[in-house]
Length: 65
Image (cartoon, rainbow, N blue to C red):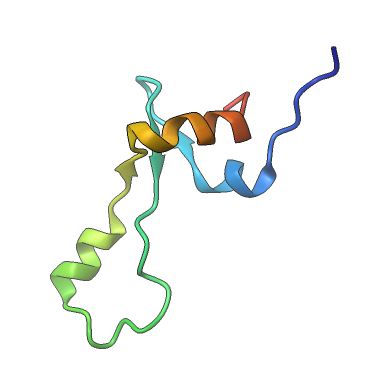
């Protein structure tokens, strides 16, 4: 059986924590930032865990992550 390929676009978007959980960036911090408050932008800067429903999709795209 050949090796599975990792989707590089997905591999760049996710990281694994020390306990093995997957983390992602929050959406909404690329443009149109002028009208968003500072506290909102700070909360968008933090990384968040990948949800249970998306976990299967992410692990299929990055089998060796």
